[in-house]
Length: 371
Image (cartoon, rainbow, N blue to C red; front, side, top):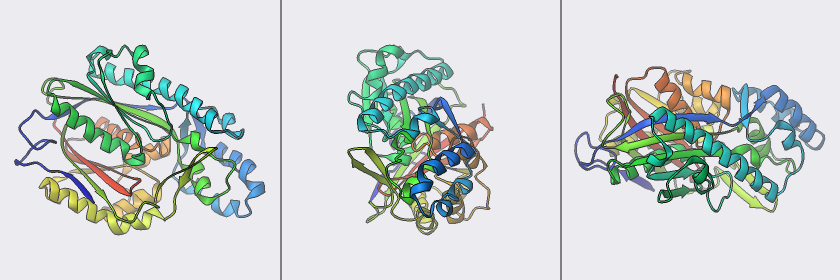
């Protein structure tokens, strides 16, 4: 299945009509508050899993091959050593998630020079907890959002959520020119840590995932100036018969990670075709892309994307830097990488992409002009 947002005019915008271009006014990546050192995580995992897992030392090599030095978590490291049920995990998600939502939103608004009362629409992307009312409603009063702000909570996109969320926010901004759209992609992956299960997938998740959020401010028609990146084209590609590659299982204890297939070989084989479909839908040639900006799901996934795109090894320096310092935070991670690339002075057209449950590749192209 392909979901294509195709322009109908050359150089068209995200919606493919003559509405004003959607611009990214501000981007604020925000790590969770507690730092996890990878060496300390290995020690704790050995204490928890080692006595019950006969092949622990063999599988635990993944801690050294992730490319991660530090990650951030919603809760202190000691919190994860005590078995937690669904109510405790949910309460931690509501409290820590709301606090992080407020922090990242305030940072984005400050960068954009706006007040919370200027926000007309809020898109909240999160797949690592259940909140009804959703996080933006819980943060509304503390932030000073208007009572009539439009709320769009989105669940289930996983690692692709930051890119798909950016596309959705851009389209909503274009649907009402002059309005201000806030996107918050927030994931507390570590709250799904399972000490009660002793599977390879759980150990890989323990080695890989961290917590964080990223907020973006978008507007079409007014504000941002020439240097504000323009969202151009969006595209999604979902492969058939791939529901088992990535996702959640759910039981009375909480979410359980699903990695039923090896992702890097799939990416090497299939990702290039999805990129080709995106370029075709956007009416772009490969040489029109100055930089691919990718969600770093892990070092092997990053290397597989480089191979699939025919790029030199170690092309994705920003991706590896984000992975090293923050781990895989799911949805916000691609926005962390985009911020890293932009802060390093990128000018030109980039394609932001991420892979998530479905199994789906999500793409958004952005045009960045010199200030």
